[in-house]
Amino acid sequence: MITIENATEQISEYFTGFKKFSDQMSDNVNPMFMMFNDKYEHPVAIVHLPAFKDDTADKMLKHKLGTTIAPFFDIETVSLATDVFFTKVDKDNVEDVENLKHERPSQAIDRSEGITLITMKDTGKGLFSMKEYGRDDTGKIYFKEQTSQPIDMDDEETLHSWVPPMLMSCFRDQEVIDELVEDKDEELKLMMTGLVALQELGYLLQVSEFGIKHITEKYTGIVSDELMNMFLDGWSDMKDVMGEEE
Image (cartoon, rainbow, N blue to C red; front, top):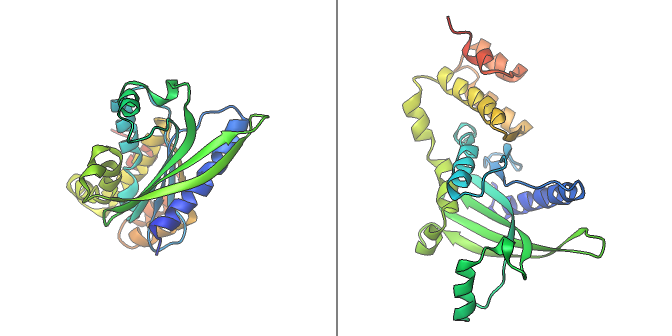
């Protein structure tokens, strides 16, 4: 079974490597989801978000859309990695804390850089981690110590952020899917067309061999052979799945 700590370790290793490579190419790194089904030791899917506007509503929408594939893989653990600016203040210094409310970390003179990692289990338990990084004399990134603290959806303070509740929705969206479809053929079609739609919106999707294995075992013998073969052989257009309209 995937533990919260193991999931956090996997996304940390993957995202820090991705960050180093992208930094050398002078590319920005967008947030990324890593999704786990407890039957497997490695992720079933990885979702890289597209760029978003400097707007909370747009950010929330694109994060939520990135989680919509989760129910099809029956995930029990989800992790989110984000490249961030942050500032350090003494929580007991009232003036510094108040100033922090009115100054964006990305615009602060004494800003720091790091990666935030948030992992949630379907139990409502989770882990928040911060992995600060610096730059050497040549501008190359080096990572500092990673710090972590537990998250609990029963803790009122956790609900001050929209991120943990958004991650928890991954475990409840099957109820929405059940209302949208009449049978498992329609459910698999919904997943396949959803993947195409996300790619067209700029999401980068990686379904691992474990994800393919899970979908194959879940739907084989339940959906039509034609649809199952289409999933296994690959598709690139919604019309491939839904067929041409008359």
